[in-house]
Image 1 (cartoon, rainbow, N blue to C red):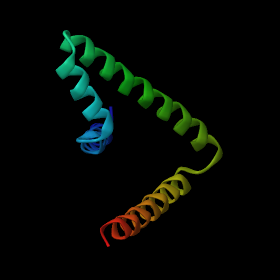
Image 2: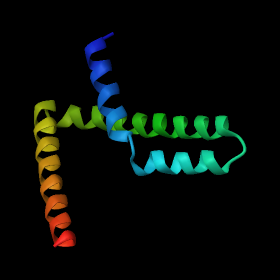
Image 3: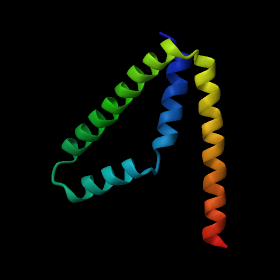
Image 4: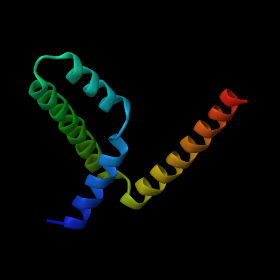
Length: 94
């Protein structure tokens, strides 16, 4: 097992999910529900299912497009999204 890849994946997903709408929805469901374990199981299964979809599609795409191009494209997309969000925040604030 590639422990470095495991730790990197865990850290990236854990940090990305902190405070996002999924976590806030889970918090809301746990606060209002009678069974917190059911909320935990449902939210954990949903995250596993969405991760499985991403892994399957990522593997399929990697068979057609070389992984380094996928990584470069993802990097460019994140940069573009960051600029768009920053410009949108400036319009809202100003």
